Amino acid sequence: MNGPLSEALWVLLLGSLLGFELIGKVPPTLHTPLMSGANAISGITLLAALALIGQAASLACACWAPWPWASLCSTWWEVSS
Amino acid sequence: MVALISPWFGSLLPGLFLPTASLPPFSLLTVSLPTVFLPAVSMPASALPSVHLALDLGAVLLLALGLKGLSKVRTARSANGLAAVAIAVAVAGLLLEQGVAGWPWMLLGLLAGGGLGALVAYRVPMTSMPEVVALFNGCGGMASLLVALGAAALPAGLDLLGQLSVLASVLVGGVTFSGSLVAMAKLQEWLATPPWMLRPQRHAVNIGLVLVALAAGAALPLGLLTPAPALVVITVASLLLGIGLTLPIGGADMPVVISLLNSYSGVAAAAAGFVVGSQLLVVAGAMVGAAGLILTQVMCTGMNRSLTSVLFGGALGAAAAPVGEGGSGEDPATAASRPVPPRSAPWPWRPPSGWCSCRATAWR
Image 1 (cartoon, one colour):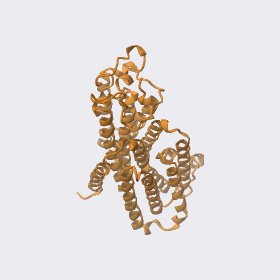
Image 2 (tube, rainbow over the protein chains, first blue to last red):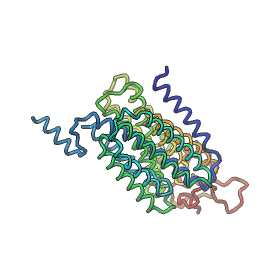
Image 3 (cartoon, chains in turn red, brown):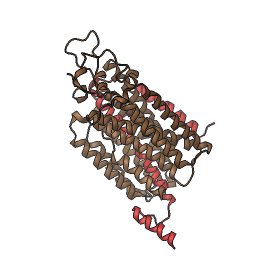
Image 4 (tube, rainbow over the protein chains, first blue to last red):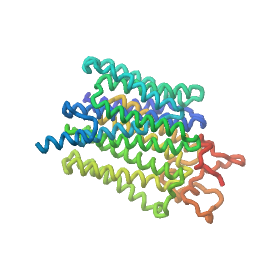
């Protein structure tokens, strides 16, 4: 059972412990900045979005164009011919 | 076609609302550094797995140091910049490994998002900071939701782990998104709790929504439902659940709720990490989730209320409310959720939270 699921679960557990331990006594003046900073760090979802774009782009055809209407035109062209 | 559109949204939204910390340079740094690395991607991707790993590990280290530094007054400013650099390093590592296929989408999302985020962060006054944090938090949740939907829309199917992580990401992301928007609307006083929302039946409705979402999620790997209707059901259920959980809570309790939703958005980021298989995301999301939970508890003890009374009390389970304001015609949930001074507190007492300039803790 050393597959990616168990690795990811270990990582989840240890990451949570790390998060619990890192935040000790927080002075009240830092409540807002800490929340804002933690919010900013949770913007790391950006990486997942970038990875997804990479996967989708590599799946499409070589002439993949970034504009929705261009890909719409190409699919309409293939369908109609 | 769907596979092409959904990653675009997935990048646009987190890019669109790159949550900025209280110092403005954060979003500019995160936007500019990856674009510097774009020309380097002529290298073959398969030659650099170790570089990606090294950059990921470095990013986690910097993130941990940054999060720790944010809890001490002396190091808070530099820790903010450290976290920004960490995310930029992580983005660079990802782009170096997988190449920049689809770079117009990425660039569009990053510029639109980073620009909007920087604009809002610069222009908004500090007294509205909780609302801004709520807004950005909601968009972080929406980003996880869209990443999960986009991964489900890819033509390659999902295995069991993928389906479960998509379920988790959609659920948590949806709750975070709608809950954060409701929180922002309440803090801006655009919304008041309608009286029908304060009845005890709302707990049954919320539990029912959770069960519906879990049932639809369980039906997915069992093959009872095709992915599209199941995902629609889970998405709608989680969005309604977010509204149902946050709407009954009063305005003065909103900072605590926003901190809790902040923690949820970290969990949603971890779930998105499960979806795309990135351990960096899982670690960072777990750290933010756990840290947010601790911060929520700290804020609750500062307000002298317990977390359960904040979340589920509403106007029914509140602690002894101050002088009855029955005739003032204000939101009953807000009246019941004002911070209560401890018995030994001197008069005049101010709630010892960091939101000293927040409108939600107005005393009458």
